[in-house]
Length: 463
Image 1 (tube, rainbow, N blue to C red):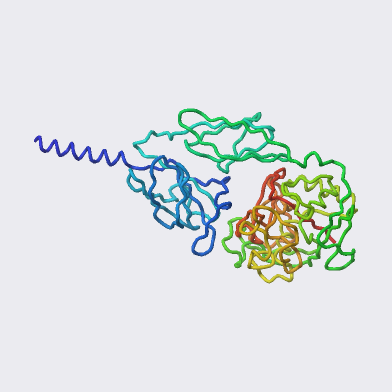
Image 2 (cartoon, rainbow, N blue to C red):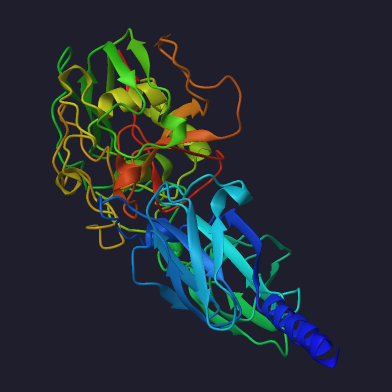
């Protein structure tokens, strides 16, 4: 009898010990505001950008098994795992716990998407149910600044942003229009909360900016005489600045994720036939800082240079710029509709079916993450597309007029986007974009007052 009881006791102890060493998934979710997969990309075996799964675990994680593009990236209590798109599960191996198979569909994520970042948080049932966390407080000035911690926005109030994070090292950046940004790292300790005081300095050129336009001698890359009924026209503005434009002949095209568009997003589907019934002119170049200053009297951009594309301009800023430009020139400039933008980017009636605007070799036509050196470049310094238009892939994103709407398979004539929606479309990729975002069919959107050093514009003029 004693032997039987002893056997039961040993069996119970063994089972309890095993149970005490099991891992559990606290959460697995898409981190939609985390840009790590885009800003620090890694290619899979098919030369496509991977997804990143950030595994958060207080303990020793020894390996991840499955469809993994090695090596793993260790960041304190976080491990970055690069995995190809469409991956559906992973196996987590740790030092002190039983292996854990994580099937993504169990957490409402059917499969991973390229260029997306996900966060998997693990707990051992021998650990406390709450992770070891600490509070980070960032006091910042001016109070209108934006605070990012680990690439995620932290809402602030009255110049104070607070967030609770796992103990360990974290990155932060504080930025605001008209000020130099400040970034760094902070190490959170379990023993006490951490506090940072950030006071941004005004940009060196801010005191030189004025609301009154000063004479500018810098000119657009190419200035041609005004010619009527030509495929290329040049419209003078003021102070030696002109706008070069290319005629786009009316026509019909297939909009959206056509077969040459590799790895499209769902919002590019379904493809549908679009007919544009009127010819129009579109800017040969993105609007430059010289043109913006000639009209608005100041340069809002982070990267300074007359022939660099203007950036850090919101959709609302663009409307104000266009209204003033039209008063100066007597013309009716506007932003392109999303359909007009994509038709021109594809090359209009001269389209050769490229994935990017003007080539299947992105480096020929675009400044993007692999070649930009983390900055914008002079407009027109890459190859043009079939219509002679520059930089419709890369350099800066370009605002469109439309509110973003979902596609349908029905044919459309002169579409103008959703009837009402708070987010406006922008297109074309930018200096930090991966190749996927530079495709001519790729769509993005944001609130109309959003400013960023990746957002600019290109003008359209109806005949």
